Length: 286
Image (cartoon, rainbow, N blue to C red; front, side, top):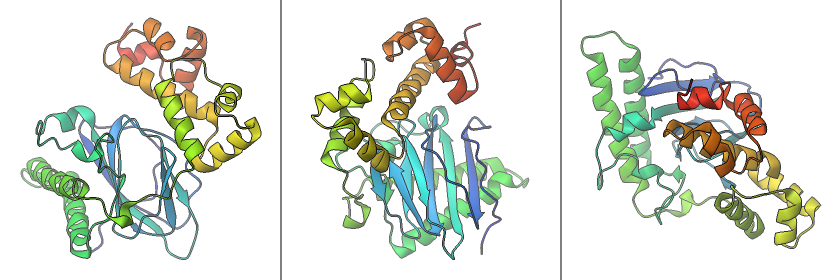
């Protein structure tokens, strides 16, 4: 039986310290920009016409597929409006909360680890596994919103069962169905270079010179594949890393330079615009 659904909530920040779960169903939806979170995301695709872009990789999910996003990955759903409603269940889990459950070699965050050779953002379960995943998510949503005796304990048990299953599926040998659309070699190389050199001076002109292509070709191809401009991708990557450093206790005065911002004023404006708070608020400095 279908659980209660809701329209898409555009907020991209958690209101709870542990986890949140949503069951979205939209007949029409505006485009969603490339973005990132401070938390882990598990996305169960149910219906509609959508592609999913993660760090330049383009996935074509089928009904029942999972998409796994870690906090350091820029991502974006690409919607193609059709007759079917766009329906999906989404689970957000905070990093601190997930770290409480299991250490190596049984960490429940392994399914999000992009360094693993078999890692894929898209997991393609069998029909019976899809039914099990959806049933667990619906049960979790019901217990999370319910007020029955020990509902929070019951919900936590369901969440652990769900995450163990997700990890088992994600850590198996990759299947052909999990493969993304091939990213052009040029863009893969540029993304890798940006991620390795984000603290240095970077620009469209410098990257075009380094990879021996025209600025127009690089700009056009990058935007088409990644879903945003080179300039915005660089800024988002720097801000993402800066926020992680601030939350780990680094001071704003050292973070801005180590993340490639030329001066603190530019860093402050970009950070405040993206996250709605100042760098010092994020780090806890007064």
